[in-house]
Length: 78
Image: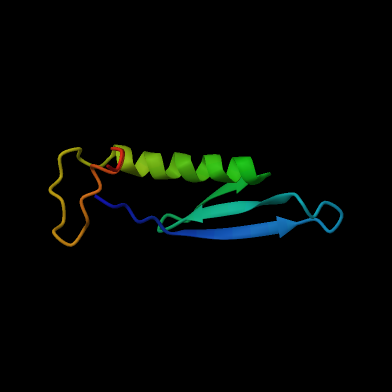
């Protein structure tokens, strides 16, 4: 089952430290804001928020007929 989560992403850059990206994520529809100070924090926050949602989903949901079967993707191609 696919999970679609919508965020508003605000990025802030410092003209003296152009390599560093900071900002905040706003998870919709609740509009709770999650700040981050660098790329690593941003990725960690995205993983955390995605995993929180997926934990609440039932494990044995029926697959939508329009969605491809991705269960065998970890197997080597012969």
